[in-house]
Image (cartoon, rainbow, N blue to C red; front, side):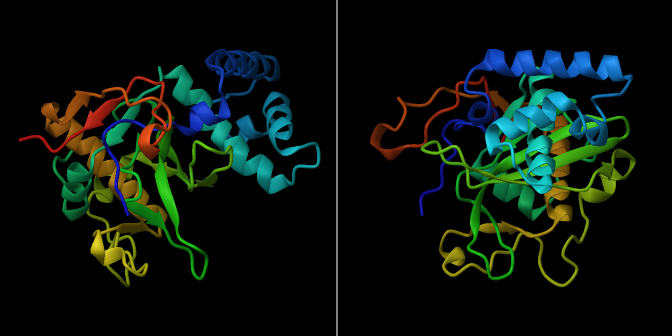
Length: 261
């Protein structure tokens, strides 16, 4: 299995909004409805009840979209809108840096690097394992800061040749406890990030089975970026779409997180 971290791949935001102007327009309409209703569109619960959001999700899923689709894809819209408002902070975690941070924390200040963003993981390095279901490759993690809480969402099974993807909104976590995430024992009865998928040991693959592991990885990346300024470098563009079977590159500016020094 080929791991990939040479450049940022097509992101869920680009799949959701092929036209960047559509994202800006939707964001403006959401803000307008929030003002009219006297609600805060930074509150995920209030965000998901907005008519503009519901209409947008039903436009994707169809008029008979089930309630859980509104919740899951409404959460994707929530993160995509706040990602756009924050200026599109896209970070690509490289393989060497990922392995270093899986092994231990580097830095002690896990404050988020921006109010919202998307951490794209090396392709096919982290996997989602849920019981007897087929493992899915994790593309990355969205985060959005609202007040004193961090909201995150795992994204898996992203492919540029189709519009489908898997999104898993995670329970909000209090930022006041972020330092504890750095070394939390997330699984309790097993090694965090361990992957039991057949053949996983050949490429030293990892798995994300708990929300604690996701927050642990995010916290370690945030702390590493603050402790090691040289860890963040400008990303480079990729080849033409689909060249030699390579992943389709993102059109968005990207910061690569490398193993500095």
